[in-house]
Image (cartoon, rainbow, N blue to C red; front, side):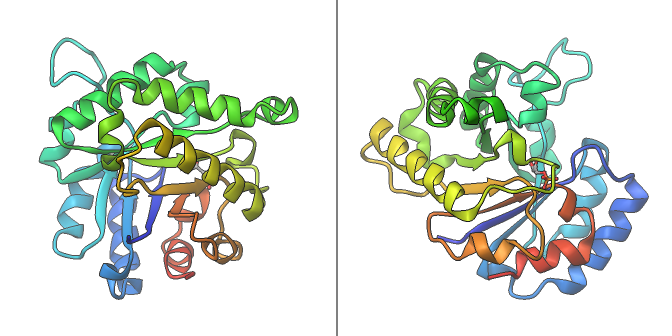
Length: 247
Ligand code: 13P
């Protein structure tokens, strides 16, 4: 299975900056078919990004979505709107959505169900906070987040990717050790097999949290790590390309 290397720009880059970034980034892209490269810009940059990425093999994704197709939901963006712009992926349940904007497991579940119904591939983010890790609750937290998000849609596990992003590693400059990440990835893989013994293992489990060009290779040494979700270090096209081609 091709590994997925994804850029999550978060609330960064104007349309003009997006244009400059993508033109520069594409100069570094070789053999895009050897891995899956995904860029998730803010909503306002999706249109220009989709125009520039057409035919390049680099995929486009969004950072969030609403679970309804349309209606009176001021400020929200629907999955069909994203699909019209060429988005094939959407990040769901990012820790910043959970902890800054109060997204609950119930809301995240609705978004996952909507993605599956509407043919969008979600990247479900899970991860424990520092105090939860210190209290040795990591596995329990991850299990609860995954079980609630996927309740009732276990048969579609293969149409989802999961990103393990420990909250304490996001934007801190201190990543999990690759061994720590592998331990949690293995736990997630076993849980997915338990939830759906017939799954074909097509769910990639990504690691995210302070991934940089100089540590990406260490993570990618392990088969259990199906890709990377990169924040800060994806904001510079050269730095992101080094991560994309770190393995
Ligand atoms: P950083 O790479 O900045 O730690 O962010 C990770 C992240 O949240 C990606 O979704």
